Image (cartoon, rainbow, N blue to C red; front, side, top):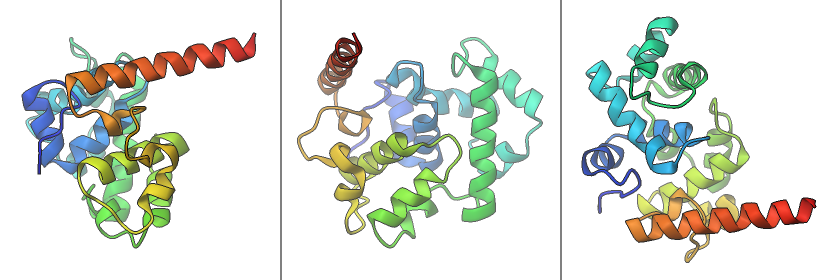
Length: 191
């Protein structure tokens, strides 16, 4: 499998490629910060914690975990709320998937079921779930029947609209340009 190129940092991208929990956490953190910053977050957490063990994160003292999140440079610009979301996500993974992030997608029968599972995760709304589903299908070869349809436009083969399409510094810039154009179009429509 080709290493991911989302964080634009070799070590962080290697972690995302090899550790399913890191990839899921990166997607969770992809909110109100640049995409590459969000996907570098799991590497920062592993460095600070010495692990990315789902059960240990789920059981951590919330105040201490937020302190880890907030240590400069912060893992996310909102360490308190995102620390809580990370712990809630890990708690759900422990309760429903034996602490194995990859079990979310490895045991799904089809794209519709996988999308429903992703939507049910703390911090994952419909759009984030569809984008992550497209990321799994396009870049990791996780392709249960119907995954493209379940991912909606994010599953389009030649799209350059989300993290699912970032495979190089050039595609990162193309995705960023797409998002800026979409924001400008939405703003113009409101006025």
